[in-house]
Image 1: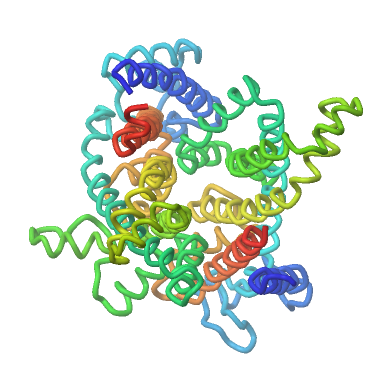
Image 2: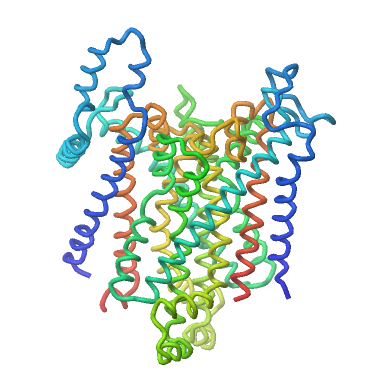
Length: 317
Length: 264
């Protein structure tokens, strides 16, 4: 576990990222239709003007040249300009990063705490009613389509009961923290639900394995209270593998965020992605997807690092 | 004895499948038949239209059951393709080990680390695939779980005595793999396939919900929800049933998968 190891992991991730970007670039550019369609459908745009626009965005160049240019510019920090808004891609993304991190952070934090609690209770009462109730909840949480749950929540809490706003980041002109909170409750719940269900299953399974170990019997034999056995001896060992599960799940969390943000009109990266899809905004799409993939790969490396730090056997061995 | 949850799950699936296969045949309406006098706004449930009509005057129940055929078919076939491919990759990696294993599992890890939904959205949004291509795309994203399960199982089986016996008798590696190893992993493959059906149905409905999956007028549970979205407030009877059916179907599939897994 040295700086050299870390360097090796990051270097190993680069070809993967390059491969992903190449595939995305090909898919996006080889697919029929494109950003020029908007102009092509407009009778007042002459063919000459069309050619000028294509040239301005480099869309008339051969694909390998376009990819090479994009890659070179990307590496030097120039992510191009949004075709939809004309603003720099990097500005568009950075602007949307805040709301996404806020929503994702709250949802993931809540999901982690909740799944630890559910997993521990489940494992401590294997087969008894709390375990069966939690088991039913996790099964339902994994089976419910998030987009439909979002619609139902909107219908019940915004339309019928009128308790919560149906979407957006905040009410315009209102600065109160309670308003921000009211806006985040439903999207965070939707985003956290499936994750909570899946994580609590991992924690339960990990706890059950750990609780069978000899040192747990030793801890009980020396008269330690059940809570201390569960938390200090059980959870501490069961949570180490769970950390990597959390990091590995980031890919599916990003997928969930796209749907959740789109439905609740949350002005984050997910909404930006859907808007860019509709507008065939190639530069923004590439930027968002490459950044998302990089985030997932970095999270995987961070998971290994965290595992090493939490587990002395890996740290020193 | 059959696990109670497996039995319950299979029962629910049977009811839903029978309803979707035969329902549209018994219905007095076709899925794309419009009642022109009802055009304009959705009609609430009534004796003539048990689940109401949509804004084009089409019978919601008929569309729901017809859409179920597409959703179930795409889910089942997608899961079958994914399981077959995942089993092949997992068995090869687990049995041969060494660099074959490292290469295949590295590839699997890379596929797992890609945010699947955004990638599929880009592909389907730009290509607008017909159902066969959609099935391949869904399979392309769900084969990783079966591959990992099968690989772990095969690695365990590899050192069994009967495999050694087959080797001593002079059986080739591919023969051992296909005649001795894979038949003994069928239980694992069944679990993996069941779980894959759930993921495939979920993925298809998410894509169709976002408008990038199966295209209207052919209904699926996902695109029925997509079309019902704007009518959520004024006609909730259009949004609730497709979601309930997706939920119950995936729940039933998970119950079967969970039950099978526990029995082993």
